[in-house]
Image (cartoon, rainbow, N blue to C red; front, side, top):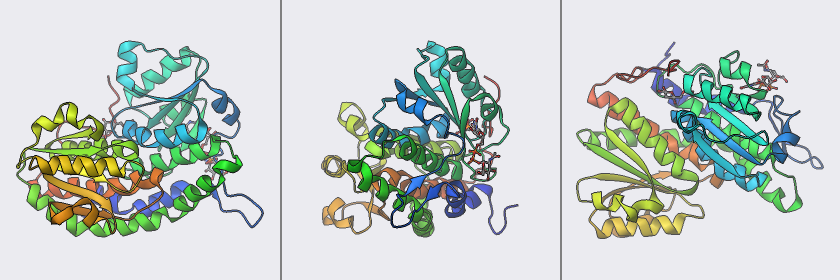
Amino acid sequence: NKGNYEHYMQKEIHEQPESLKTTMRGRLIRGGSCKAKTVLLGGLKDHFKTIRRSRRIVFIGCGTSYNAALAARPILEELSGVPVTMEIASDLLDRQGPIYREDTAVFVSQSGETADTLQALEYALENGALCVGITNTVGSAIARHTHCGVHINAGVEIGVASTKAYTSQIVVMAMLALAIGGDTISSQTRREAIIDGLFDLPNKVREVLNLDQEMKDLAKLLIAEQSLLVFGRGYNYATALEGALKVKEVALMHSEGMLAGEMKHGPLALVDENLPIIVIATRDSCFSKQQSVIQQLHARKGRVIVMCSKGDAVSVCPGGLGRVIEVPHVEDCLQPVINVVPLQLLAYHLTVLRGYNVDQPRNLAKSVTTQ
Ligand code: UD1
Ligand code: BG6
């Protein structure tokens, strides 16, 4: 049931304040004056010790689910101190990459049925790793075959392009980072800021959804483009990949997400006055580096669209050069949840304006159960 919406993708983008709430329901504890704020993940509580002691955590997934894991990687590394590596499921299988008994392998999949991810799970089980599932589908193959896991509880997702599952996956992995991270005095302020940020996240997502019309206007400007680049780094490298994936898969427009730190090692050659480039430059420890990326693009007459934190339009676009998308500021590790929303809206409007099928893009399926 699409309710008042024209398409499922549109409905699912707009219901993210509610889906994030259900993802967090019963799992975040605010605590009284003497009780610390904590996270409860019932499906993992008997396994935290093993996860903390593992030699590394390996995230395994495909498509959007892989991108969600990539977005959560920095905070998991920071809070757990355990090295976190990333694997695209098919690539792990192609290489028969090493997986050890001392590893925790985390399988991220909205459907819980993706053949590549499922095969990688069988492979990790054979190699003796602790296998953890993060899925939206109770009773799915990944939920059944993993040793333990977390259901993201985002509600059924019908649009082939994943939107609300992505943001809920990131939130679950941020909660996982809080749950396995040591509760030391030095990390207490940071942990509390993240928990407060999680509580407030649905409100901030509601706020960023107000950019709907602005993103429709931007889509009108970009409707006939051949290509769109998205540059991100740090917490928002994943946002660049995911934004570009959305544009590619539904709007059928060539789009690439790129690590901004790699710009001068190749992509800079593409820059001219025609190719649109979205640069994600919201406030975090990478901000000044992104400012210099923007300067370099302007120096080459690049067609730059900057996503920045509210109030930063002047700092990112001196002299009013280029367009800006201003988004609410949240704790750095949660910023990817906010920043992806305007890109989801852009992909949605581009698709409708270009006259393509939003909910069932050409050649794609919601869950690919064959290899
Ligand atoms: C569970 C109940 C929820 C109830 C809550 C009350 C289910 C599905 N969930 O939620 O209805 O409100 O207790 O405390 O009955 N699992 C895997 N692999 C996965 C995902 C999950 O093995 O990929 C396992 C978990 O380890 C756990 C079980 O499935 O044993 C349920 O997981 P989850 O729904 O996340 O647990 P709770 O949030 O505790
Ligand atoms: C692809 C879908 O086939 O599978 C993507 O087109 C999706 O949108 C990917 O992200 C992974 O799916 P899942 O269900 O494993 O998260």
